[in-house]
Each structure stands twice: as structure tokens, then as C-alpha cells.
Length: 471
Ligand code: MV4
Image 1 (spheres, protein in one colour):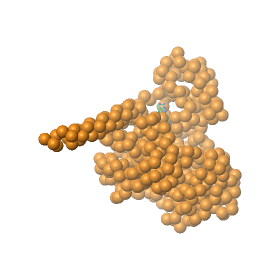
Image 2 (tube, rainbow, N blue to C red):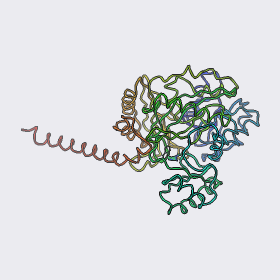
Image 3 (cartoon, rainbow, N blue to C red):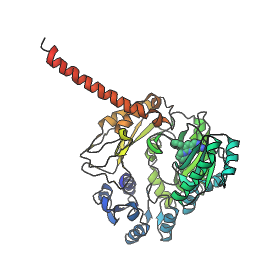
């Protein structure tokens, strides 16, 4: 059973079919016509459109699993994928959870628990407090020691939620109180800690696979620095800026992080890297990630197949020395959003929908022509993934693929993707997490320029017809 929807439900079913496993889909009333429902061997409606009534309805999902004699549940990403209580409920009902144990999920779901778990494993961490900071006075003392600017982070946060930047001591108390009350209202847990702020980091994450027999491998890195307000836009593997030596050190450190919580399955260890190439452990994501395809493209490993085998209790059959990086892969997330209006969701019907194709082009999507993008869920339409021998060729292939992608009926982020891929800073691989913030206005201007050029071309055409041609 796939307890999810859209492209990831389809992605998981593809591998299940390849492995001869029959599939059960669940869906909300908004998704009755969805592709993931059509593709499954069996499909059951689990409630109304809002996620809390359907894709987050644990009791209903278990009820369908029991009815269909489901052996294992794949949670995809989002929804219930990092919910330790759900993983436990699944196992308590005699069903395999295709993911790590509730214990691993729970440790990595708390940043303070994660820090405590990895301490003693000699993993580089950003300078800061070890435990929760109880008062603004204590926090200020630490901040003075490590030096401003500092970040106040919520232990229960993640993906950028519940973070406060503090530039100097005068602002500390106010930001501390805000961070605490935000954490309390958003996560029901107001524990916060303080870290030195790394100004313009790169976001580098390592894919790992570990089994229940103590074996683990790392499948190299993905650079996910191109993002907007913690929403990733472009991801690539390998990073264009990492030496073999750092790559291997990060890989081994990522495996230590996995060991620290007895991890089993596919996981991602997130690091930030400063402008001198120092890297620091941030958090571990205990799920299959949206951007997993770029890793599959450069390693040839089907990560979902490995997840299923590990959940069955099999030993990892791939050894570290079997793995090598083959070529280069880039992913662009195609959202139903109007980039020019601050990435406002653009909901509607896909009146025209034609995907690019060809060697080294992969599109993971959950819609086809005529489908409506529901307002209830994430507005991602598709992931456009390319592979080529070299980074340069992969960039060229992506630019070509974007131009062949035809979507009408909703606004999309394809044009913004083209802006990123054509940018010198992207081409030189020198970008960091400030990229979108730094260049967004250039994107707006480039658009105005191209509008101006179009108008100029039209005017000169009219002029030619009216005056010059007659001469
Ligand atoms: C940081 C940081 C700088 N210094 N921690 C954002 C998401 C969450 N996983 C942690 N994040 C950050 N933590 C310290 N000490 C900068 C970020 C950050 C970031 C990290 C990864 C990718 C994109 C980011 C965008 C803004 C801030």
C-alpha cells in the first residue's frame, strides 16, 4: 500500500510492479480521477479532500490495509512519512512500515535528541549550545562566546521552520521570546537552542541506505542549495564543487549519523557547508526524499527497491566499493505557481500537457492532460530530471527539455527554472543558498527585457511592412 498521492505514489508503484508486488492505492475525494488511483491494482477512498480527513487519517488507512491484507505500507514523503506514532501503529497491526523504526524517526524528529545521539561520534557540528536554552540570559552568554550573528532554532522545527536570526545582543531577548512562543504554538514544544549563523551556506545532503544487519552504504551527495524559502527548486548530483576527499568524509560521517539512531532504510543526512569548505551536520530526514531521482540517475540504484528489500529484512546486496558516480544529473521541480507573482499557487486545469522525452530525460509526475491541480495539496506538477556524461551536458539537456515541456492552463515555474539553468553562477557551480534571493529581481527584469525585445521586434516588423517594403 502506498499511503500517499501524486508523483511519489506512482514512483513507488513502478518499482512494486517491477518486483511483482501488487499494489493498493488510497485516495481522497479530490483525487478520484488521479493517475495513482488508475495505476494501482486496487484503490480505496479514505475520505474528503483535506489532508487531515484523508491522507493523514491513520485509522482509515490501517482499516484499508487490513481489509486488503496489505503486507507493507510505503508512506512516500510528506503526510505520515515522518510520523513515529504512525510507523508504530503500522507495526502494531502486523504490517511492515517501509521506512525506519519509530525510534529512529522520533530521535531525528527532535533536533536536540539528534544532537545528543550523534555526540560522541565525532561529527562536525555548528558551534552552539548542546541542550535546550532555558533563559534569554543563558542564551545571550552563549551567543557572546560564539559571536554574532546567531540563529535560534526550535528543537521540533525543521526545514527552516521555527528559526530566528539574531544580529546583535540588543535583539537577543526579543527574538528568543518570539522563537519560544512560535515553537510552542507551531509544534507544541518550546525547546530552543542557539547556533552560530553560517552566512551563505551550501546545502549538501548525503543519501544513505542501511539494513537491519548493521550494513550501510552512502550514495554520494546532492546539492540542494537552489531554493526559495526552504522550498527546493533545483537539485543536482554530484555537487559541482566537492572534492573526492570531502565527499568520502561526508559519506562516512553520514553513516555515523545513521548508526547513532540505529537507522534502517533509505535516509538523508543534511549538512551545510561554509565558503571555506567546512561542513556541519544539521539534521537527518528519515524518509525517501523528493529529489531522490538524481541519486538514482548517477548510481543506477533503485532506491525504492532497496527500501522494500530492507523492510523485508534482507541484507544490503550492494557494497560501498560497488558504487561509483556515473555522469551528472539535475532535477527541476515544476510547480503550478506564478513565479513572477512571488510564486503564488496557480490552480487550474492542465488544458495542454506534453512532456519532453529522449535519452537521459526522466519525468516523474502525477498528472496528465485534462487533469485539475487540486488546491488541497502541494502544487508540484512534476519533477523534470536529466542525466548526461558531464555537468555541462546535463545543463544543456535540461535547458532543451524545459523548452520542450508544454503546459497550458496553469502558470508554472518552468521559465524560472530556465533562468536558473542559464545563469552564470549556476553554470560555474559557485552558487549557495542565497541564489534565489540574490537574483530574483534579475529574473523579473530579464522578463521585462524579453517583453521589451518582443515589442521592439513587433514594431520594427510593422515599420518594415508599412514603410520600408514599399520603397
Ligand atoms: C542554518 C543556517 C546557517 N547557520 N544553521 C535551514 C533549514 C534547516 N534545515 C536549517 N537551515 C539553516 N540552518 C546555521 N547554524 C542556514 C540554514 C538555511 C538553509 C540551510 C539549508 C538549505 C537552505 C537554507 C536556506 C536558508 C537558511
